[in-house]
Length: 90
Image 1 (tube, one colour):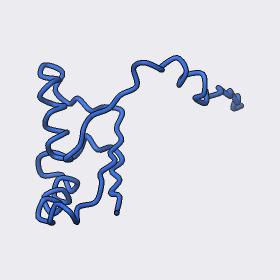
Image 2 (tube, helix red, strand yellow):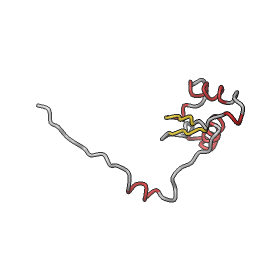
Image 3 (tube, helix red, strand yellow):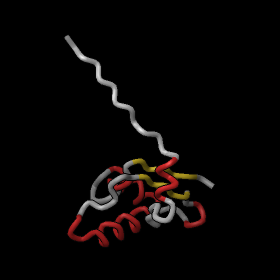
Image 4 (cartoon, helix red, strand yellow):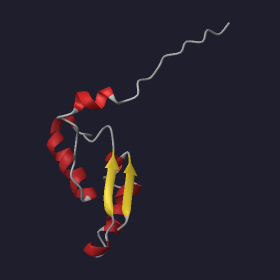
């Protein structure tokens, strides 16, 4: 089984290259299609119609949107934190 990974998968809409890839994906036989794993920090591009934004993303990627809800604090405990470094320039 193959895996197709999209970073910034929110671009999978309209005439973006990602959507072109997915149009080809839908031409494959169902049993030959790779699994899809898409990542994005901004899955909603239309805040006035967030539900439709997610629905279009799911449809275009043949996927289901999943987000962390139940264990957000636990995830935060294991996420790296940036360290600020100030270097004065003279």
